[in-house]
Length: 432
Image 1 (cartoon, one colour):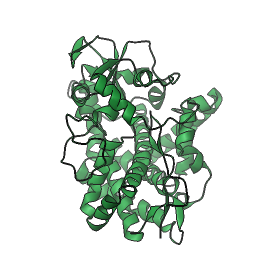
Image 2 (cartoon, helix red, strand yellow):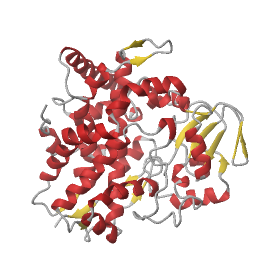
Image 3 (tube, one colour):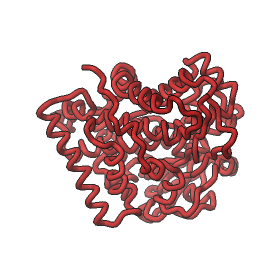
Image 4 (cartoon, helix red, strand yellow):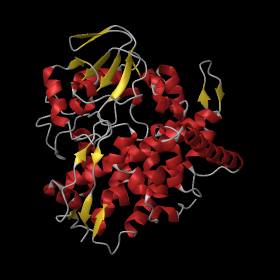
């Protein structure tokens, strides 16, 4: 089956982009009153104090709490060294993702693998895993959705000199890639994501009635799509999920139910759209502010994936992940009690000098070591290879068309900002 053409909404001008894909607006939606600066140095100082500290990352950094995020009242501990965070990721029964069941935003998405643990997580993940493995990404996702979306977005920029790639490329690429991959070819993807945000993680900016209205719209769109794919299977993620079998504890199998299908679709759109948007901007900015690396990647495109990986280590957009400690355990000399909430602070762990030389430097030629940007262990990001190939394709496309691309010298230097969801304030460039 031929790759679908990109929808016209992909290249349309729309003021909603500036609101939805803006780190300042995102901060406000999370209940903050101001953009927080880059806190990498402060996280490093916390790690130097001790590999494990009592308190949440925000408390330890002197930041105000975000209301409604933490859930139940618990003791809190933050893991800061690479060794501590690696233990937290790998030992997923001791440090459990069940903590997400206390997150109003995650739970509003529906049942997802985020909050599952152990065998339940493995069984559910195995239904979707074949659709996201690297060979499948390279021979299905890339030619079918990623390359066409990159080409359409860059075509739109032809003839222009100065642009903000944060809005024109970084925000649009992952949103349209994952929405089209789900199978929403005829739907305005921007409107769909807007409603999905309003009824889940953006609830603080919507009245209960507005959130309910948006939830009904999202569920109806997905329900109609599932019904169509049951009658006429397509070549998309929904069809793949419908055709997969969930293996139950007694070894019998069944198909995913509606709630499970909804959960997978919403999670793919959220995780794929937000994280990749911010990380792509971070990577482009890192390359443009380290001229030898931009030139090296331009001359040897095999280095681009190394540049993406290094940006994930150097400035991962999500600097910590929560876990629930299920038993008394000692980590890096600190006793962590059962029932405590643990934060795996990869923003500090990825700069641990015990693992990397000169860890605060962005260096695409550094020796390989497993960073924690997408997590490790059983809960490593399901869509990691999709995200990487979107970023690689975007940077390749920019270098093909505008090899002399550079940051706009007539505008203020874009800033790396935010803490809970970090990203660039803008990626303003000159193409010619």
